[in-house]
Length: 230
Image (cartoon, rainbow, N blue to C red; front, side, top):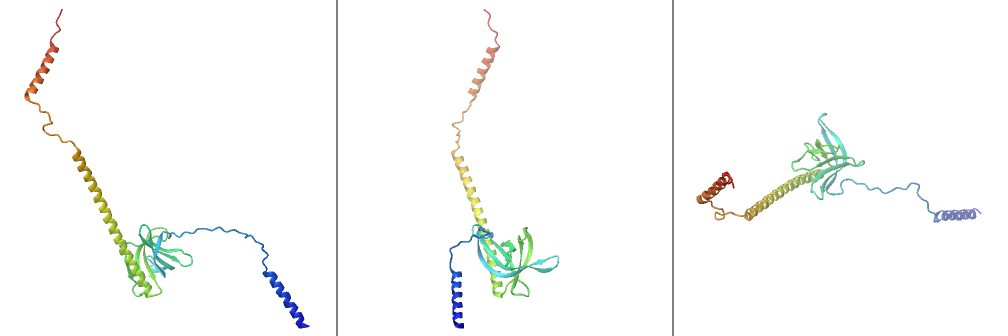
C-alpha cells in the first residue's frame, strides 16, 4: 500500500516538474530598457607598447616621504599619427589615472637604491588635470618586469630623440628648398628684365643743345614783339 502511494506521489511530482519546464510562449517585456552607451578611454588612436601590473608612488616634498599613487596597470601608448609616446597608469578597480605624461628625449629612468624591483624618474605629469613636476617611483612584482620597464622607457626616449632630429632635418631641408626656389625665381626675373645698351640711349650733342636754345630764344622774342598796327 505504501509503495503504491509512493509511486503515485512520484508520478505527480514528475507531472508538476514537466508542467513547470514547459515553454508557454509568453513574452515578458523588461521593466527598464537600457540603451547601449559607447565608452571612450582616450586611447582609441594609440597602440600599447608595454602593459605591466605595478604600484606607483610619488615623492611628497613637503612631507619628505613617498606616497602611494595607486596600484594598477602601467602602459606605454604610441600615437598612430604623431608617433609620440606617453606613459599612462590607471588604478585597477576605479580606472582612475595615476600617471599621464609624454616620454621625452631628456628623460632618464634609474633603479631605486636598495630595491631592484623598483625604479624612479622625473616627469611633468598631467594626471590631476594640470601640469606638475613629479618624482615617480614604480614597483613591480619581479626584477624581470622592472628591467623590461626600464629598457622600454629608455628605448622610447631614444626613439623620440631620433624623431625630433628627423623632424629638424626635414624642416631644414624644406627651408633650403624654399630658399632655392626663391633664388631661382629672382634669377629668372633678372634674366627677363630688358637690358638697355649704350646704342639705345639717345646722345645729346652740343649742336643739338645750341639749336634747341636758339629755338627757345626765337619763341621768346616773338612773344615780346608788339603787334603791328594797321
